[in-house]
Image 1 (cartoon, rainbow, N blue to C red):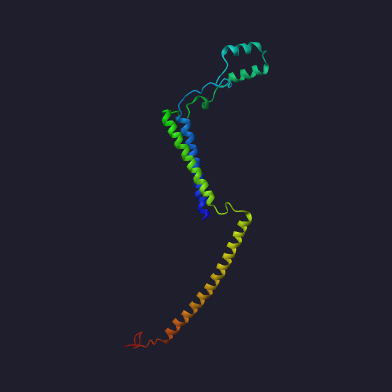
Image 2 (cartoon, rainbow, N blue to C red):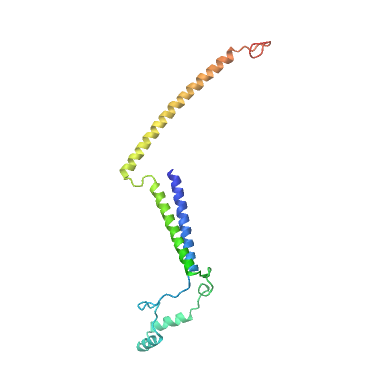
Length: 188
């Protein structure tokens, strides 16, 4: 039974992995292309103005290492992975549709997680200590020994019944007279 649960658990994990991939793919392809609100503390969403950059650059002494890095960066051409279209183009949907789909995808992930938790709770030995599991194994081993002894007794009984049946059949075969003039029943 636990092997069935393990198979179901593996299937659920595979399905969860597929759901994660599908969810991330959907969310990355269908989101509305909206720029984030600028954060005054984040240089990536709120870059400094050109006047501030120019003043800072003129006030600093040029560093030869920085100049070499800038020259190297200017000479590097972007590869095809930087210039080609993405393999999955962005196809935004309406914000309400996206929000509904996002909620549904999240619910599906939660349900699959709950299904996995339920299967894990059904595994034998969950919630039991090591001593209890060892005791269960000893009891099962004792049951197997008793059943094996019963099987041996039944096997001996079966051999005895076969021997007795064989002697009855052989006795009947010897008692039947197969004369030339008579049929198998002794009647002519």
